[in-house]
Image 1 (cartoon, rainbow, N blue to C red):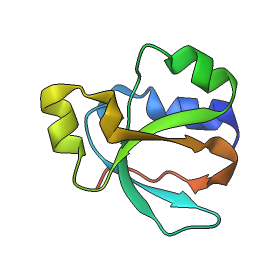
Image 2: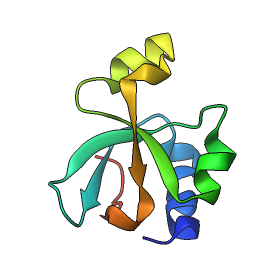
Image 3: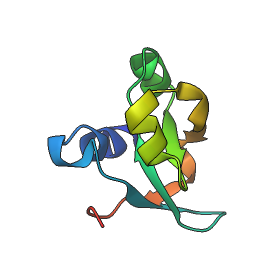
Image 4: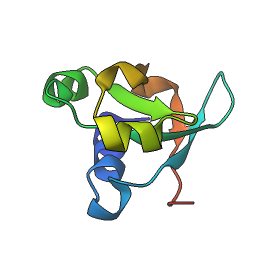
Length: 84
């Protein structure tokens, strides 16, 4: 997926706090939350995205611990639907 399309989805106010079903080309759908850390602009310029997945979004909301996140390449993302 193109970085500008992902950015459009990530930066919508209603999506910042809610996990999304993120669809990938070569892996299953991942429920996750895009986070905007201190390196957000640098990662975005490289089409890399920090995502807190699985059961960790609630823990991340409380602690803001970036070690709960993984970095995914935007080219592997195929679809980001609405909030679930």
